[in-house]
Image 1 (cartoon, rainbow, N blue to C red):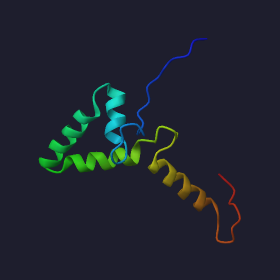
Image 2: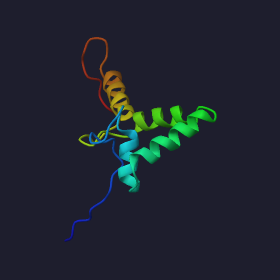
Image 3: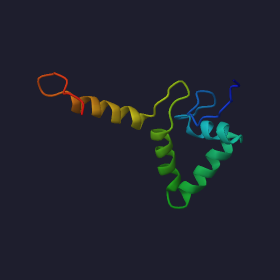
Image 4: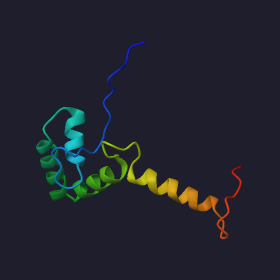
Amino acid sequence: MSEYNVKKLRRTHKGRIVAGVCSGIGEFVGIDANLVRIALAIATLFGGLGVGLYAIGWLLMPEEDSDTSIVQDLISKQQDRSRTDWSGEQKPQS
């Protein structure tokens, strides 16, 4: 059986300035992260779309050493919290 080297879109630690979104996209696509930063800056100047895209990337892209994103972590914590009733006992899963 052969292993496939699959690229995964992750926020990187190397080349990170704020959250690693641009460096992660740049690494995934195979371009310089500064080009991604410039594209987001231009998108921000023309309507503010770049800030929103960066925030979405921050929330949905997992860190390179993690398998889950911030949103996935929040959803799983909420699901765990909803399974526990006020007395601290676990509710049965249906």
